[in-house]
Image: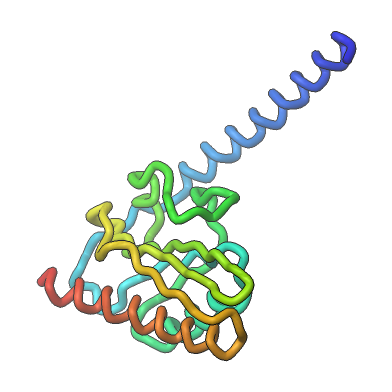
Length: 166
């Protein structure tokens, strides 16, 4: 590689990073601060779709939308592109107007799928309960059943947490 080519690649990379940094700062400045009122009758949940998944997340979101919760779903700026079960800078999540964050991961083999997920209280910046895990047969019927089980568990954990908080 020539020196000129390395220089141009470096300049291009710096330009792209500066655009990302500028848009990141502007996005952060416009985000609302989370309302930490636990007496709110309609808690808000942000559900980040699990990586490598099309079926589970959509069923979980549909089930949660049938509860008294307000459900926000999608890929948000503070989640990594790998959609790992860890979050970076948990205090920044408080800037979203949501009470709970659900993040998770799937790992599959030929015959099974393991789903791990966390329910995070954004007001207290802590796990509501230890990381949850469910292993299923890797077929459509089992995955649909598992998605309903996970939605029920999320509902149970959050409603119990709200009751115990008061």
